[in-house]
Length: 163
Image (cartoon, rainbow, N blue to C red; front, side, top):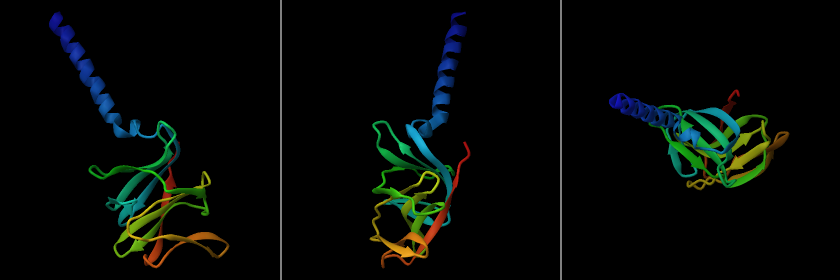
């Protein structure tokens, strides 16, 4: 009887650890999430000095304990990065889309902004390749344009996740 009780307790402990492990980093990530979406990076991308291989990523924006704002990026393929990135600046969204605004430099992207039209916010990020944002009016609304360091702008749609 004592052996059965110990066996049941051990099984319960292993099950509890398994459940805690399967919720993983995401369960402990952001304290409050205000934006949740999915982006398909067509090329390797640099996001504030971190390299992300091409592929599908979950993109979350919110706060962690203490109120600090972060963007959480989690690769959907096993072995891809899971990062927390603090924005460099906040501003009202100038886009009608949820999108990553990137500088395309050859065969990779440099993420400059996360436009979240659904919540009316735009986040800017530092980068290590010298591409800088310069506000300029194009057409009917304000847009971002990358200075001479980058070849062109590429917009990567971020599909809003359903609740």
